[in-house]
Length: 220
Image (cartoon, rainbow, N blue to C red; front, side, top):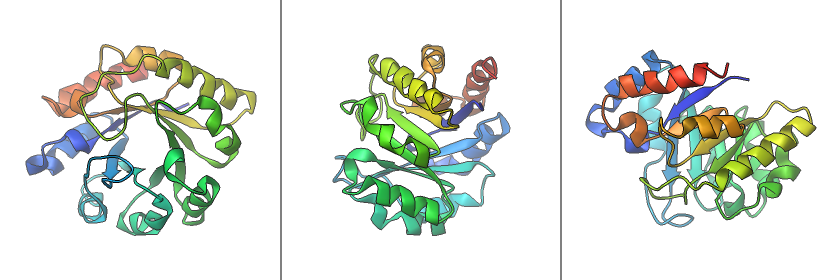
């Protein structure tokens, strides 16, 4: 299993985004997390396809696109064209979850399925055979700077157990309130893809990435 850091550019300084991205890549962050918010599924609005298209060529990182939008199936093809490599949709935002997953796969992208803190771990069970990644939100989606919800650890453990029971190769990504001080708890629970925003971009992004990667490499 690969252990991956996915810095969230939502927390980056966009005046120097290209330089900040390069620092995280050079220090070992294989993914770049791209949070898309529509003001409907979540109250906030972030950015969309033009921003993704503009940064795609600036790094070799995997473009990990997290669609926090209502009925994301409408936008999957557009994000593919903009440069997405992996697209994650929210179970709670889809009228037909399977159709959204199938659309992602048909376009040749990796498929992720995300659940909010209120959603049971068991809800992902019908889709485990069809996704590459489950994203567990460890804060309420749409707002940065929230504290990690401790109950998320039990959810991660249960999902990892379900994956092992089926002998599947499915990543577990965790997003929200993760810092150097608590990342080991998340990894010990069974996660292997870590999203970090302010913990990476709040300060020296190169050093922060390096510090995260030192911990992640302990698990390889």
